[in-house]
Image 1: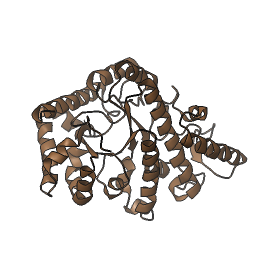
Image 2 (image 1 turned 180 degrees about the vertical axis):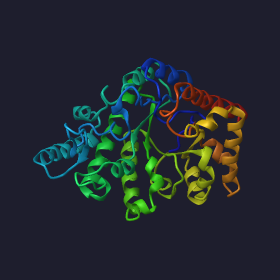
Image 3 (image 1 turned 120 degrees about the horizontal axis):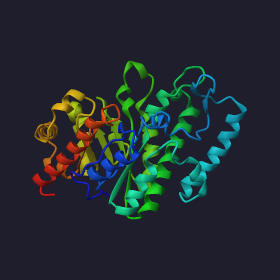
Image 4 (image 1 turned 90 degrees about the vertical axis):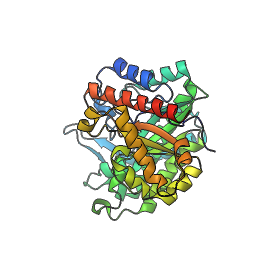
Length: 360
């Protein structure tokens, strides 16, 4: 069933550069009260790096204490002990999200500084929607290596572990959001910056079917347990896979790559007619010079151009607008605090202006 109440609302992608939790959360509360998001504060906590944040208690994940090197392996005695426990835990949790075992796979303060404050804000304000995220399975499995230096995605066991670990991390977040506010709909974004590499020479042997199955498994679990699923990719990519996996929201860098999205107009039209959403990353967090020069009028022109790419392919403008959300193009963690705050303010102002224009 299509979700209503999201038309031209705004949220953000993930990282902020702030070293002060209260300052970061103040920005979230002021600019994104309708769809608050949980910020990753990598400058405050190195464990919030997207490759590390969702690996706690993942079997096969090891860190060499001397070198600090992280790697995955499936040959040690510890792994065989861990994997048996993990699979038993997984089966119990997906059947019953209220199982106490889910706490083992949560995000404690060592891996998400802001999560407690995020939940407190949800509990206090009870928004209709709240957004959080996990690292995408393609990005994580192509970033993590086994002890021989091979990407985890090429190992069937490691792929399964990664997909199931991320699913549990998503379920824990859904449970926490619903506990804070039973009527709030959790939106879980699957952050997939590496998806732009799918089909390139770097990963030529990885099939679309394999990646489709990874996305589908996580998206289905999110939706089965009362959440909405989204996929974020900030590069030029083949949107065929995410558009057909049952994902509820696709999120792109619309400042740079909106024309690329229009290449998939047939799948996209079907996607929108089903009430699924495009989250347009119009505010250029990946281009500091463009962000410094940006104002709301310029960004409205960017949005209009992005919509025109689709209407020229025959997609009805009303369907596009009804199913549009506004975001920055990507996380803001690499920016200065001043520029990040400008990006968040512009995102909110753009959303407000577009809602006024379309009488939302």
